[in-house]
Length: 355
Image 1 (cartoon, rainbow, N blue to C red):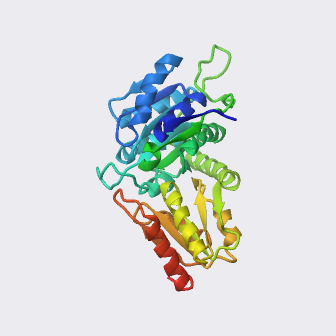
Image 2 (cartoon, rainbow, N blue to C red):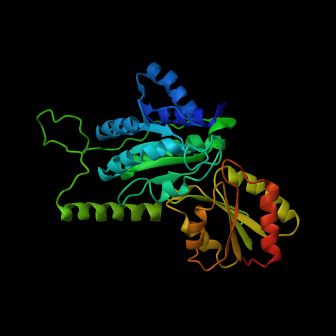
Image 3 (cartoon, rainbow, N blue to C red):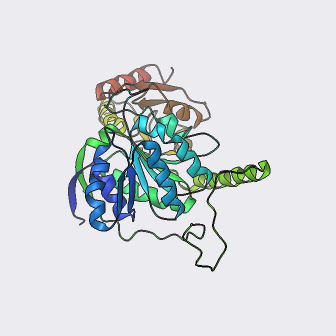
């Protein structure tokens, strides 16, 4: 049996990144993710790695660009407004087809907002990580173990598809403590013939660049990139199904909201309501196939979110807008209670699934 240690979610991410082969971390402190930087500051010097607190979030993401161009595993982390500052760099990384890994431990917004947990960066992560046509793989853990597991998975996906992977975790996930296993085996190896590692006078120069002044070349790159994205949508979507086999009402939730929702679902089941849950683990690619499996018997979906309603748009689109979708939400750093979610379930059941 694997040994487990008690860790904060933020610490689990940091240690998992090290065990995944990351030896370069660049960041800037911001609550509620600062423990990642603190952990890396302590661990990286002991293993011959690089920890650097940059002068800003903008500087940190450009340092990530440089190390990624050299073909090495590299990461940064921040919280909501800090990730906004990194958006230009994320676009440059995408345009240069570089693998990178970023963590966003979300806090309430918009603006400076607050330091309590939120899921209101869903649009930023899945729709608009920066300017131009590009995507990021977005992973949404719901436990400290998943914070670690999805970190390793994120590095592997980034290298496989030459793009950015993001952990999108609400602040609760970063701050909570749970037992976690950190036994992952040896990091996967990926060939990187494109990396700028020096020619040794044996090959042509590798050039990492996102600037294409010939529009036909830029268009070609965009189409090739989206062919890769289509493969990711087919192969890499992940989700959890919870009591969905006979569900007539289906809750959709991720992160801390999904954990609270399970308590509400248990109580609703005890009252005879046929309710289950789809928990997206990848927010992009969004797990559309999960909705296709349950669409025949589900009458309505309930999107439970720590935002004003962002994922709900993907929940509506997944069954091609053929089913009503209700919103159960808190915002600004507040978390929906089990009673609140239960009330939404019972209301949907009473109304026969109608909005």
